[in-house]
Every structure is written in structure tokens, then in C-alpha cells.
Image (tube, rainbow, N blue to C red; front, side, top):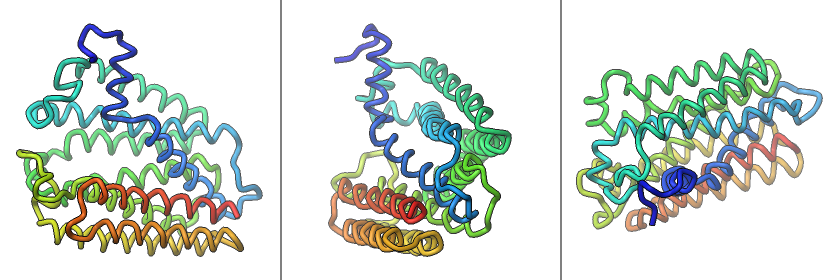
Length: 298
């Protein structure tokens, strides 16, 4: 059992395991950043599918962007989370907001250095992304209103995914092609679907004092909304696969997008428990990114 006197390394690892599991986030970043780079290079007709090795420094930068977003959320939601989730390490004082702030600052410094090494375009794209995360931290100055409108909250925060997709393009080292917008739309809608899927519960799974899409919209309506957004995400992913795929890559890419759509649609049905809904939306997002990446690689 970790406590405030446990070794610092153990407390940090414990916090990461609880709130930012490195394994799943690494898989997410590899598929997200990798597919963005591969699609960008294919659409721009780059002479080689893979960029210069230095471009892959963008992957840990994206990983750390997700981490500093977690740190921002911990500071923003600490008062509410301490009541709703007293069992968490932060709520119990095993880790402190000050420690997380220092870790977040170190993450941002690495992001700056890594992006600068990749190049000026990557640094500019990172700066735009970081500026948006700061605006997210401040909840765009209308946090009290946004917190009463859960779906609008999700939509207004979603552009950070598109900005990170643009960052992937910036690391790819190719001219921007308007067709890359299909990729941006696919991952943006897919991540919105994932966000909804994380917060759809059965009535007996709701947490008192914590809003979810099912508690606000009703379980049935929330499931329908998740399915509709997932269909839109899959359609954009399929267009992207069609634009970059050839031969086996085209076939595999379209199958993966379809598998993801079937998974999320099946799990979104009324009566499915929260963990299955989250699993379905996770599979859909990861499968679509894998499909787009493989199609571009073919």
C-alpha cells in the first residue's frame, strides 16, 4: 500500500498506473502518430513511406502532451475528484498537485526540445497545440457554463486531437495536402466517440455527483449518439483508407475500419455495461488508426 512516505519513484509509478497507464497510452500514441505520419507522406507522394529518423521524436512529444493534459485535468478537477474518488492516490495525498505540476513542467520542456530538434514546422505546430491545451486548462473562460453542458464540453475540447494530427503531419516533413483533412476528421470524430464511450453507464454504475453522458442524456440516447458519431468517424476513416491504400493495404484497412464500427455499434446497445461500451469505442478508434496506417504503408 503506497503512502506519502513511500519512495518517490514508487509513488510516481503508482500514479501513472492509476491515472495514466504507460502501456495503453504508448499503443495509442504509436498508432496515432505513426498513422498520421504515414498518411501525410502517402498523400504528399513522398519518395519513401518512412520519414527521417528524427521525425519519430514527435511520438514521445505526443505521449507527453497527453500526460500534461492529464496533469492539467488533475489540477482543474481536484476539488470534485477528492469527493467523488477519495481512493485515488492524489486524493489520499500519496502524490501532490505540486509534484504533478513539476512533472508536467518537465514534460513540456521535453516537448519544446523534441519539437525543435524535428524542425521549425513541428515546433510551430506544437506551440499551437500547447496554446490550445492552456485554453482547455482555463476552460476557455466559461468553465461554469461548460460544466453544465457535458456534450458541448467534449466538442469544444476535441480540436486538440486535430491539432496533434497536424503535429504528426509537421513531423512527416512533407507539404500539406488538403486531403489530409479526411485523416484529421477521422481521428477527431473517433476520439469524440471514444470520449463518449468512456462515460456511458448503466443506472447502477453511475457515480453520485459525477455527470456522465448516460446520466445527462439517458442510456438509450447516449448509445444512439455514440453510434452516430462512430459511423461518421468510420466513414471518414474509410475515405482516408481509399485515398492512400492499394492492394492488400486497401483491403486490410477497410476491414479494420468495419471491424471497429461493428464493435462500437454492438457495445453501444442499451443494456451493455460501461466497460463493454468503453472497450467497443476503444477498439473502433485503434482499429481505424491501424487501418489508415497500414493502408498508407502498402
